[in-house]
Image 1 (cartoon, rainbow, N blue to C red):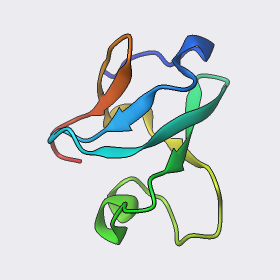
Image 2 (image 1 turned 90 degrees about the horizontal axis):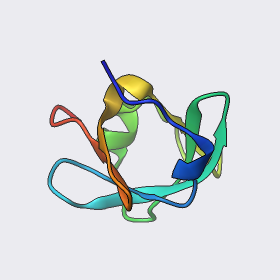
Image 3 (image 1 turned 30 degrees about the vertical axis):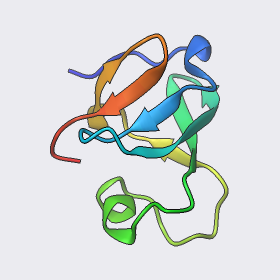
Length: 80
């Protein structure tokens, strides 16, 4: 399960299952998207995604968190 991340996914918005933007894909490295989180992103969602406190500027997006990849955005699965 989970969609394949490609270099073409760079720059896409990452949104949760409610349509709220949680960040933007800054980089794709070896099949992993690295996200620059939105400033409004709450700590609870960061914890569920395995992202630590605000010590880094980009965070890896777990492939198992991805529900759908469209031409414009990456949507997280509902449990996130």
